[in-house]
Image (cartoon, rainbow, N blue to C red; front, top):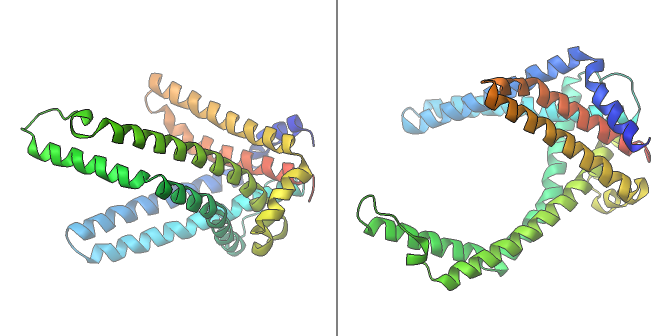
Length: 276
């Protein structure tokens, strides 16, 4: 499919079956509420009765299960794009749960590599050591200073340390950004491979996932991913802007966010269908 066709079809797709979109929205709300309430009860348990900690853990675990169901259904939407199905896939609770767990593993594996590299670079540039020194000096100065006194960082931290920290932070940040963008693109192929085969081993084949980008076309993959990102970003900016004029308008995100998830998953599947 052409790039414009992929984006157009993906934008229309969520509205082809509003009932399934509504179910997805409900499950997103349930997952969010279970997680939030679970954290609240866990906090109450730490502060007072330890019994609430157990309740918090149970609620959070239930939220995680629902989250896996949601993630698994996203993979099903990608599969619908690969197969060019006309409507959204049916919910398969057991299948979606298992696939969601697989998808979770895929995300961990694909992003653990850039994370490790960034941590190594941070260690090599002594980023964490310098950050610890700066924070420690600021805290000690704050404790020794009179109440309401203003602490200026240049008064307690040598300029050379600030410069070295800034340089190390910039270098690490640039490398981290580049690595995570690259692996995010490769991960898009990984999740598509999972959707196409339902095989975790195939999905975790990072070299082949990278080659899939070339098989589809580097320009086409980048163009579709950038367009997805831009469309989602623009819509979110518009919602944020309208919320500043119309109080509470951001509540519409409860509907818009799932719609955009359907859109991006469908577009990913249509993109991968070129080589499936």
